[in-house]
Image (cartoon, rainbow over all chains, first blue to last red; front, side, top):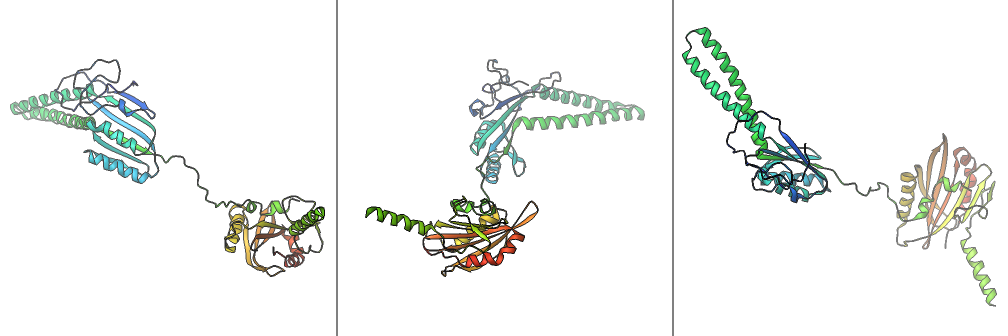
Length: 237
Length: 154
């Protein structure tokens, strides 16, 4: 986990050519910004750079990044603000993930992430914000390579099945085909999910009503003598 | 001559602030000896106290019901008093008012607090008496008589 300014970060659509790589865990970089400027966040254009280091050279294209923002906002009318976030995400081509009384999670196209963040900030008083960028390039391309390999294996097994000379051999190949098929399905699902996370950034907005002047439930009239009423004063001779 | 006039003015204001009320039998007028901003205060030896306070009626245009409600709210909502009863009351000089009776428990002992509010064009007159319930009950007749003797006009 690295923390850095996000001014050198941008994103790329998941249209990269398949480049087999060794499996590697996704790198996640958090950009915690208490009332920080949105100006440091990735702009709309899908240009990839290396992750979050101000002195990092411009990295080769095809970086696969997942953007996620968590914001705590103090607002006056929570319901109205929740509606605004929901509407904004839909207007940007995104969608609602979940919504409760105090929290909403939406997903917006990655290219509109910065835009969305700016809009959300305008809905209330930002108490804190945390923007994380997860580099899933290795994971993404590794998955693609494994899928490609699995498909090749599946095709070869299919050929073998056609050429099998006895039932025993055919059954054995079929078992292997099923296993490969299951694996392939699983990996394709993972890739689909990953692509979706790359294509759409997640914004979770938690609305926290600001500490307000506590409103006294008891009426206090501006007549001090009323406060003198009662037994304590009466009986204190 | 000027000195006489000045003395008269002083005497007149002293009289104006003096509350016309009959001290209940068995009570002592302790207005001069006690603090608390009361215009009249008397106590029994067993701790029941009756007192009267005159307050400038400001704002003048507030209706009597406003003041009745204000007093009741003050005691019920902030003072933790239970309203036991309320009803009309009339001063000795014919001004109608409202009497509120409250109960209040303290340290396991029930206390009674009675407050009557009268409004004249310029003044709010608040007459209170209270103490431990058993003692107030003992003095009830004398306290009522005292309250009925109260003159409130400006």
